[in-house]
Image 1: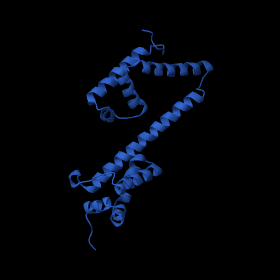
Image 2: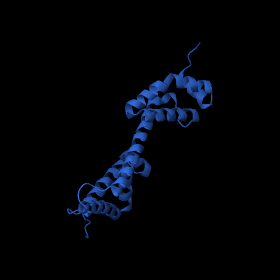
Image 3: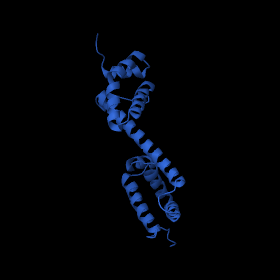
Image 4: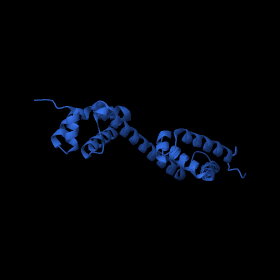
Length: 187
């Protein structure tokens, strides 16, 4: 029995050859899963990542050529990217849940402390609305959606340096808008 090259198996998989796909799956499933698990430290997420990577292969959503290097390296890069996306998605979900809980659960301390906490949070959101539209968008993508500066640059079709500058300016403006007492300045 001859061992088929990964590239040939990939090309056959792209043409919906089930046997070629099964061979690739058998060859790389353990590697993909263990790498995803090492990145996420979570069996469920590692299983989801593995499933998604192989679904992309089967559906032709991922394109491989020899110019991209070894097939196994390309597959692990795809695994890494998906694992990072999952981790970010879960962090964003946890962050949103935390914000909801913050508004429902009384914070430690007195009722006065709770009112002060809510006012500070409200001041931050009010200050963000005072920023220029492009700065609001950058802050939203960076702090609330968890995108990296490079992903923001790609998403907004801006140079990376512009994104960094807008984040820096937005933070400077926010610091100025939120007074030392925690309130929004009336300048």
